[in-house]
Length: 613
Image (cartoon, rainbow, N blue to C red; front, side):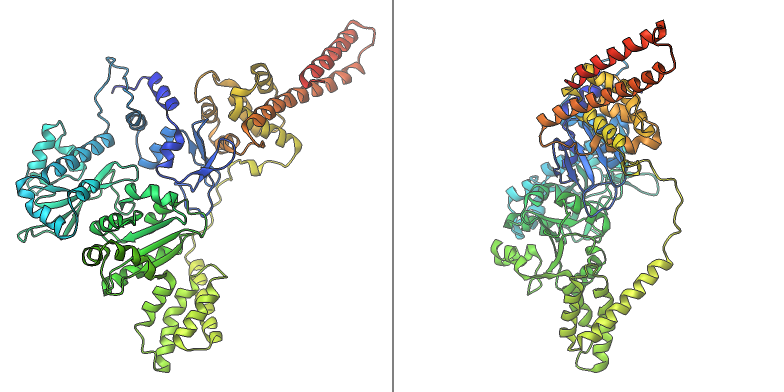
């Protein structure tokens, strides 16, 4: 297979700001000189430990140890091959890649890239079909729900024409194979091996990932003769995972991350997202044919930068029984947000789309005025199933609601909800507290009984595992200064510092790796980390990404140079001590004695020169 020219790989990476790419998935905040921080996309965490240094083109998580460059990030996040990751970054820049075999640009052939391209072309085709004569019923559907052509265009809404092979013929005519279209979920196969359009005679919404790439579709039936479900979505594909996707997030993410407080509104369908955005609630999103779950929470927390309790996540559900069940399902995961979680149900049970149609944009915006805390809403739903006029009914309601209150981890908030529950039931707060504590103990015992056996894997070498000595501190800071500000260090100083053997074995391996790479090439810092043994790569990533002790870049450059001097002087002092020992063992007037004294004199002069004394 053709291989991307190495010069292009390096040029694309050098031109790319890694923070821009990662920032599309993770809300990043400034975290000191040249560093940004956010919630790690590779593991679940409450406080941000994921660091990005644009100047080094490198990221590192101090929580789970994941690290790498922009290509590594895309490979891990999107399960891409190396070539696919390079192609994706090059496409962002509009950079023409060249391949080793034959020279000149090669056609894009990598699998996932082809799936993205097929979905993009399908979305364009559906949009074009929305203005066709056949699509009158689709346009009438949109108009009947208050959406004009401008709204349809903004959300990319299209129409899949009737017939079995319109999209199939269109995309194969553009060079896509049937196997690619099957893998993309755009066409289906029957038992005889025949291939046909998956979406036919339906209104179609493109489903995009957080970066804005089309990865699938949701389609609503329009004709009575359509025997399929009311809504039909793209099946699971290599690029479409419904439990990770939120419709509208590509449009909402900017306003979510910039809001004060940060607020996300979770609605139930595509038209509800459209209605909210058009009414001014531009942070609305919806799940795509599946219940709201833990993967959706992780996605939103990364976009929100949800590391404090100042944000809000507001769920809107229909007021009917199905909507109440949806709220209870969401509750199972809601307390994993750091943000406050609420439920907003319109007094008359209207969803946002119907509310906008019947009462206007202002009524949709006012929906948030009716939000109540998620715990309070779920408690009330539990109590609604019991006759509270009888003692037995109140006791049954307490036993049903106590486990909900027991799930509240915040010890300052739980007593407040115990009082709320006591007031709802008209019971003694002490009795409610005892029942909640019993429920909490039972939950803890159940967790312990199902807890997996502890593993005995050897711990990774990290900065925190190193001894707390002066030598470790100096060597750690010197390596960080070299990795982050090597371009501001006098070349001779940096070379001599890297040639000096370190006293901390693990840090000496990092030093040797830095010393051995070509530091004239872009990305040499990461190349040094990649050259480390696997057991030390987390340590190397931490050294590269940690905060350097300086108040601004100028002082950081001065400090980095001073640390290199300190390493060199330390080595000279060590050599001086060794020579003083030799003086004691040789005759003062011997040739060997005179050579030792000359070397001591040279060391003293060199030390004064290096130290600036």
